[in-house]
Every structure is written in structure tokens, then in C-alpha cells.
Length: 121
Image: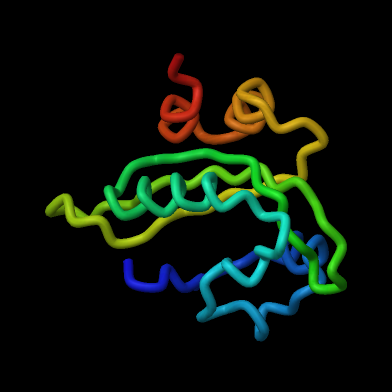
């Protein structure tokens, strides 16, 4: 997944971050990172994505106007019928508290097939 360019964002993403679809489609979501983004968490996410594994993290990210927010990010790899990793579905939510329970709470709103990945002990 070279570059992991975004191919879809919903209106809520645009409203929350302040970016338009035109500004973000085709870009990697690294533009949300800034000086206080946790490099170790970004590295963990990157490695999980390279391995084609589901992952979750809470990152300090930045809106277009420079305001920070806690981004609870869930990533789920999508494999084709031959098992080749093709895409990643990324789901984000603003989080006041970023801990394992926050991830579990967000995961409860996902379809069962995805939820199981994030609620493992």
C-alpha cells in the first residue's frame, strides 16, 4: 500500500478536520500529524499496516486551522479474494480519553466482523 492514499472520506471527516474532500483525496492522512503527534504510535500503526494487520491507536492530530484533537483511529486491512492486502479501512473518532476502553466503545459501533478484531483481550 505505497503511500496509503485516501480514496474516500465522508462529510463528517471534512467538517471535523476542516479539510475539503478535494484537499485530502489522493493524499496520505499524515497531513493530520504535527509536532505533538506521537511518533511511536505512528510507527506502530505503520508497521501493522505494512504487515496487513488490524490496528488501533489514539493520536494527537491537527485540524486545518492548527487546533489539536485526540484522534482514536481504527484501521482494518482489506484483502482481495486471493488474500492480497489491497486497502485499509480507517475509522476515526474524536476521543476525550484514549485508552483501551475508548477503543472498545468505538468498536461496538462497528459491524460484528470488524468489531471482533478490536475487542480481543
